[in-house]
Image (cartoon, rainbow, N blue to C red; front, top):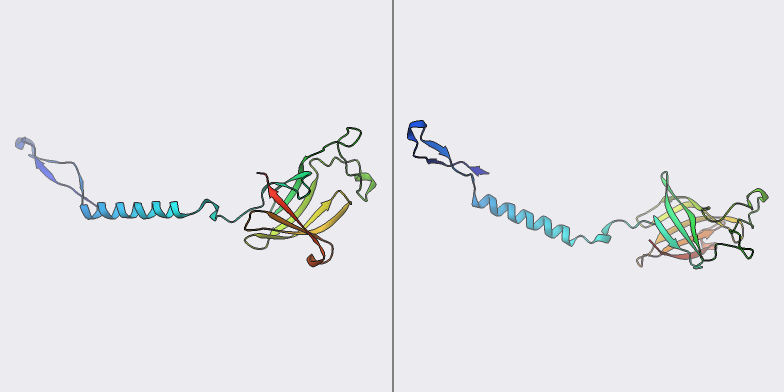
Length: 174
């Protein structure tokens, strides 16, 4: 709210009154300051981690031998192997999918291989309905995952029921 005040200019022959600088009323000024303080305090009080946690990023597998990058694939999540502690076999050649039950796929490189697919959000910190491929045994398992309060990703791999599976603890790399 502004109040327009007029002052005498000394040029009474040309109308005599001209506007002075606008002045904000003190009550309005106090309200604006108070609102600014409340908004600033609200923003400062919101923790950066208050957003819903996401598994999107790069994770170190519990075996400490590989890293998996999880990213959106349409409306679901998928993951591919992006790093190996030992990327080559004994002959110095890049690792391949030797244990795949399909002989045609046994020569495909493991680096860049999508091993996680189809996970959909089931809750604030949980995802389900996915599949995870284990190149160590050539088996594709059902998968679900959750992010714990400690920030670790718990990946549950199973065949029939989750209770009959195994949980792997992955730690975030980035």
